[in-house]
Length: 61
Image (tube, rainbow, N blue to C red; front, side):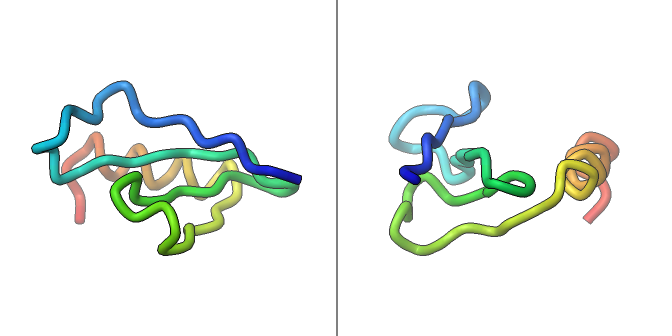
């Protein structure tokens, strides 16, 4: 199965340091750096992705 990656609408142009892409996995979601697509991806469950996004919105590190 070929992964279809979607770039974040908040990722900017060529000078943006924080470019993220998401892709649907058989079980969860893949997250990768769009500037390094061959560098692999992080596999998260939908619940883990939701928790990560909440932490980012809240400014937690």
